[in-house]
Length: 226
Length: 226
Image (cartoon, rainbow over all chains, first blue to last red; front, side, top):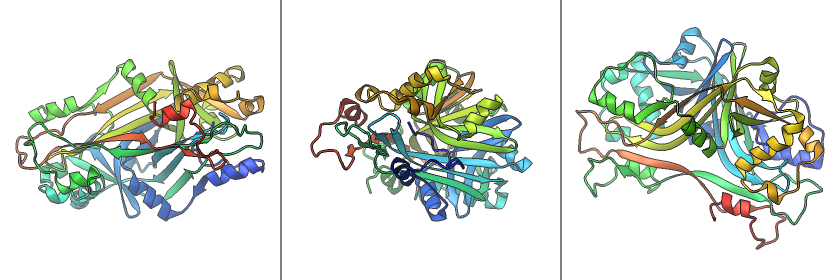
């Protein structure tokens, strides 16, 4: 089963019709616009740093802001803040599972996915830019919400740290489309793809929201009403 | 915004009603049964290793098999295989985004999620167990599919490597429920949660599947028909 989204090994694979199809199906790209579109479609990254021989990896909310990725960390907490202090590279990994690929053999069964890893040395966003960075992260998670709420307070801004990871290097890989075919596949076996997608459900109001209160535009949009 | 799924910092937070609620809302657990249930509900892990000062992190399909996590790697490729050869710890990170938490301030806005990181030194599954391990991974991704297909061939088994990461240490964290509330929140602002879930769409047959061919049971189940 080819469920591994690792960047292609440097060893060339033997060429065969089956290999050709696989190469078309799961391909690496260095298209920066494709990277940006993918990053902007997702909300959670797995952020990794090497501390000695031990890897640390933590899921975090993120937002791309031009040529950098903003990450939200709590004051005083955090491997990512330590990485910034020590000028260590962070790896920011994002993946979306788009489908389960039912081939005619287990060997060719697979997943459709988009994945990207961005590498960069993080910097702490300076205090005078922290408010704008927090709003930028919120706008990605909840577009339009910031305008519906009071502004961030000074103490709230002081209680958070935003890290910016410059997009210095990246690797992106996508598999899409039908299963790979092999010449000796049994044609009587069904083959194809079961697509997967993330969908929003109906908003659940907090207990103190009056029954029948209208949804704000940002919530309606997040729930797919708009 | 509290979108950071990092394990709780060791520094105690000041106690306040708001803090109490947050502690209830986003909590760490060492419940192994909860870990197993969560791992068994997801399909993709971000697997990290430290190579020198550079972190490597790659999304991979996985399957929990008792007290270990099986990872699928290609022959000759792979940081994970190198980690096994060097007896280095792998970190296996899994996260599910369950909802967007619309609080009455950006500061208390958040995500609902489940996340876990498992640490262990990987081993390559011995050749005589590789077929069973490949089937176990397939059964997690596509329950029932293996019985619908021919068995793995010797050359297919030889062309893959399965890694087993023993569940030696883990950290799990869950945030669920409504937004945190602060005493000075504006009660006229709507607050609540927009739930998110992964759903399967209608199966897309390969081009050579006859029109109207019945879906195998495994595909119907994956598509939520059963």
